[in-house]
Amino acid sequence: MKFLDQAKIYITSGAGGAGCISFRREKFIEFGGPNGGDGGRGGDVVAECVDGLNTLIDYRYQQHFKAKTGGHGMGKDRAGGRGADVILKVPVGTQIFDEDNETLLADFTAVGQRVVIAKGGNGGFGNAHFKSSTNQAPRRANPGQPGEERTIWLRLKLIADAGLVGLPNAGKSTFLAAVSAAKPKIADYPFTTLHPQLGVVSVDGREFVLADIPGLIEGASEGAGLGTRFLGHVERCRVLLHLIDGTCEHAGKAYKTVRAELAAYEHDLVDKPEIVALNKIDAIAPEDLKQQVARLKRAAKTTPMLLSGATGKGVQEVLRAVRAVVDGADAAERGDSAAEEAWHP
Image (cartoon, rainbow, N blue to C red; front, side):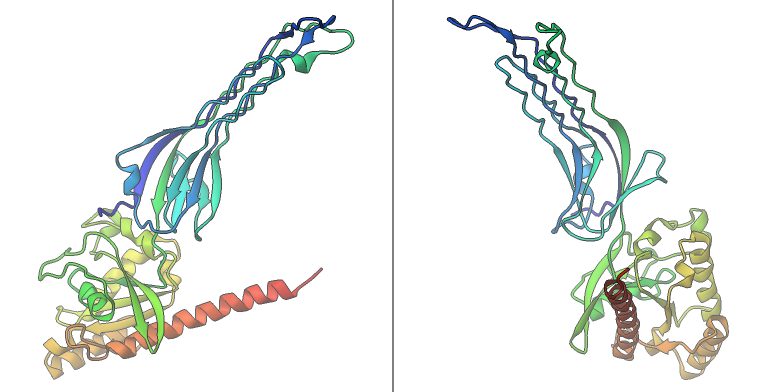
């Protein structure tokens, strides 16, 4: 299935049904009277978070969605039926923005969440609604109210516990393939990965979700390479695993390049917990490895972990470090929620 993480669609809620002008006329009934029913309410446009979706591809081929108009009122005090709603099914992690692409309307983080994006118009009153002692034969009825029209943006941000970042050819896809059942494309040229990839990683009997983000290059924040479009997928991650290619010219400069692009993207990515790891140590001579570790240690202000995604050396240690940060974040969230539940005014 093609990966699509952004879509622009046009939605219209249903207009309300018109009220009816009608009078009661029955054989052997001495007095008649108004009996026009009210119109039905128009359908809403509702966004619902469902399971089983991981892309917005459904909105690639259909961009217009319109809810049904409410039924018109009828004689004998019969009200019109309510118009059918339009349900926009979206995957977990979807955000809905207004036409300006900045105003957040909804943020779906759990299956089952529902948000009304556009409300249907109210139905009009029939003439039976206006009868009174001084107006016993009203000949007026209201039309239904129009529905809402708006253009919205759907933006998908994958839900993952940890995110892989680094320059192209840093070995991110190889690492993901080695630690999970994911099968990303692996080749010896830059930008092999063109779309984010997810994998479920199991370490010491526990699991977490790891996201592989397409490589960043210098100037990505200004649109170079693939730009920073896919960095939105790591905004929800608890920890970043920064892989540096040990065979590159200068590991410290490679680290600073990616960090500069993360800072330019904002959204507090540079403040997230980070684990720095030097990859491809199996392809480096011991003297060169020592030099690269020293360079990376000076740049990152921390001792990097060493691993080889191809041979598996050091991989389990890195996964345990990631798992520890994820567990710590989970425990902190549980502690906050427990404190909130325990407190009473």
